Length: 77
Image (cartoon, rainbow, N blue to C red; front, side, top):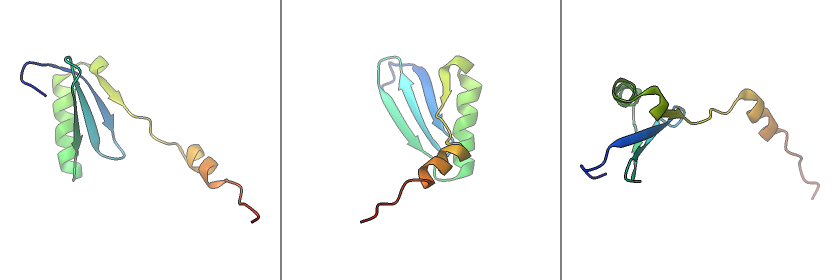
């Protein structure tokens, strides 16, 4: 991201501890956090500096989604 752009929004994936930062110029920056402390630090910067309507969270799979994946039919072959 160049210094000429501004952060337009951020997509946060809590499960994978990642952030995708979108700029007003169309650029994207991917951040992957190695530790929970690092993730929480980046999250704090996002929530402190961005408006609520600029922060998006990726869907977290529910227990029901996991059960549906497990119930796949076994092939008889």
